[in-house]
Image (cartoon, rainbow, N blue to C red; front, side, top):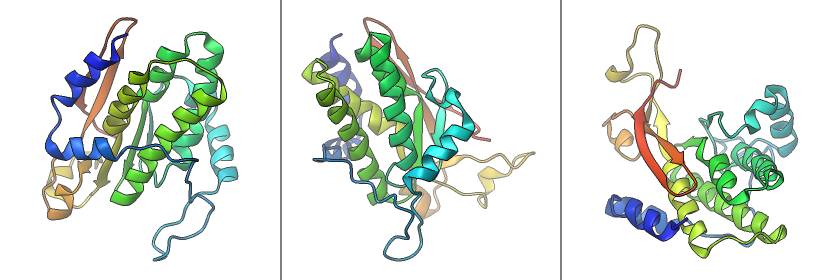
Length: 215
């Protein structure tokens, strides 16, 4: 797989803002999860402790670890749920015998929405860190450019966005919710968020966006 060509193709479509966010995705020396069940310093947010994450995922069942199943974490913080789900999926990819492509399939159907700009940056970095730590721990050989592509997928799937049920666009027959990109939504510019859809084959990877009703 020529990841360099795929990354170049994707980055050519990025805005200056997207390129800036891409460059912000960096590896930590270890996972940096504040998800210990406490409030943030302002007291506005409560982070889910790991044992509750584990129990909630167990209640959903093993379908959540199926690469073909889409998973959306709508208030994702620094990544308590997405990290746990991805780690389980990476373990499944390792057991499957084709880690390189299966790991990308595992990530491609995990979606995350967070309205706090600092937290979504931190979560993206946690996701990249998990990938690198997992590969290192299991002595998996992947091309260097593989991680550059992982960053592209993280940027697309882990979105700085918000929900807002009070704007005129959102009035549907059944009150259907949609999400909106930040920071435009903060300024009252409510453009519905499109979701990335990845097509992964042995020789190429493509992405297109689709508008969806989240529920």
